[in-house]
Length: 519
Image (cartoon, rainbow, N blue to C red; front, side, top):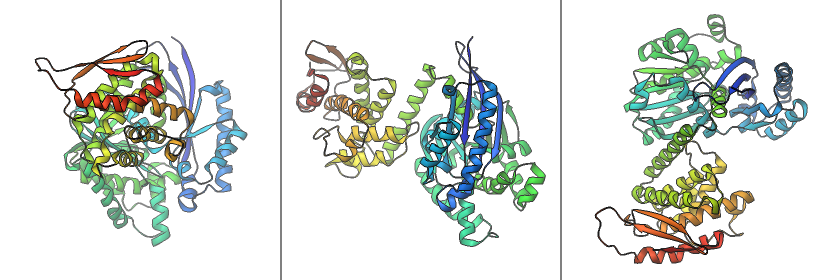
């Protein structure tokens, strides 16, 4: 059994944190990694960024000193640079001078940081939560659930229906951000309850459009504030997760609500930075809990760094990848439902796309991630008809480019949006600004995916799912699609589909060199 020493460094709003772990190969999923060492150093980046929009010189120097210390620590572990993964979350996401800072860090420490988008942070946290809960909390998988992580600069939220992703949101609602804004407006002595009630009311109304919050039965709360509450008022579910009864959590928040920062430091043994946001974080979580029907809060004793390790360790776990693909599509379907899309048509076209994609692997040379992007684009290709049927490809492009889909980062949403825009009408050209803004490899990807989507869409031109399935035959100069119907079905008229293939198959022929024929 081979083991690889790995390090995860995370720059957050309140500190810089390090995991050192071993990742094992050639063993079963679920025990493929082990944390050997942890380190954390408080650094108040969020106070700078959420007040001025930039990192101050003092904060930069403080970060560099911590990272140089971590470099020395890692040299003692003899970890190869290729196995050091450095990520940054909300504070650096919004800092205007982040690129200068990241370059300076690389020059002085050798660490190359990447910015984790909010929706990617959601994905990594879901991985960690999934690992922590295991099968020890059946209610999470059988009823409606909400996962909430309240950080210094943002709040990450996922809504799940019987374990299937309904929606994922990254909200600019963090403890440090709220503290800085409210102090600026109301002064240091202002208590946050009214401010939070007004602001979170709008957030809850938005979430209620995705799912009836009163029907949520499990609230999963990640983050250091929730872990502290679980330590004081909860019980063990397993070694990676604690449970807090609803009434016990509310009683704990009511008990500490009037604590000063000094009281928190003395009572809980935490740093000033953590104490500053503790009461605010707990109060936000209480507001979410009170809006749901959840009788318990599940608190996973894991972090985004654990999620990153799980992702590295399970990179070749096909069952986990299949689950993520299904979660992405579930999130896409629920986005479509918000815009009253033709779900039967979108899902049927997606199924046809998958058949064509899988049959022509040698011809298109794309991977499983491209397959997920194609399936998502196919499900949502007509979402723009909610705005206006005429030119709906443009409206669909706008909706998807400005939405959040679980498991997909912004670059991937841009590809999907361009595929949707290219599923009808003229093919993308150099006059299309959104298309030309993509990297060259992504532009080629859009053309390939759009050409397959056009063909599949033509096969259900009447939105009747008349062609139930197809088989694909590749001949020297043609790709023949053999249409099938449901068992016991009668003969059917393919005139619309034949016309659609003639019109929409031209891009496929231009991209792949094969003429498409419907048999």
